[in-house]
Amino acid sequence: MRDSSSLRDKPRASTVVEAADCESLLASSADLIVVTSACGIYRYVSPACKRLFGWDPSELIGRSQDDFVHPDDLEVLHTALNESAAEQFATITFRFLSQQGAYHWVEATCRRELERSEPLTVPPCATSRSARSH
Image (cartoon, rainbow, N blue to C red):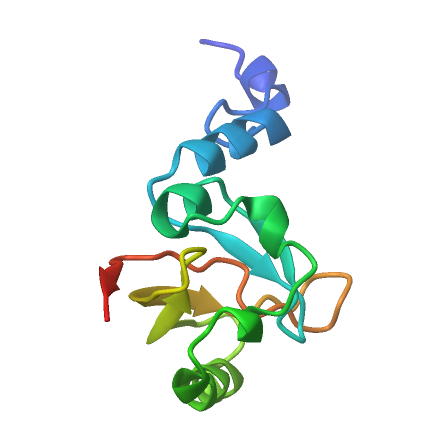
C-alpha cells in the first residue's frame, strides 16, 4: 500500500500559478486583455494593445474606456455591460479608436467581477477578436 499523505500535502502543478506565469501568458496573448474599474477606467492593458491598435498600454492606464469607444457605440456598450449578469460573460461588438485615429471593429468578451476591492469591475477580461477598419 502506498502512503498518499505526501501527495495531499503537495500543491498540484496545475493549480499553482505564479504571478510571473500569469504576466507571461498575458504578455504573449494575441488578444487584447484589459481590466477596468467599475466606472470604466483602465487598470490593466495587455501588450497586444500596441500591435492591434498602436497604443502603448501605459497610454490607456488611468483613462476611461469611453475615450476609445466610438461615440455611436457607447450606449450599446454600457447597456450590455450593465445588463449582463454578475459573473456571466457577455459578447459585445463595437468600434475602438486606434492611435492613428481610425476606428476598428472589435468583438469583446467581458464579464463582471464582484470579488474585488471595488464592488464591480467591468470587464476584467476583454478579448479583441477582429480589427477591421471602418
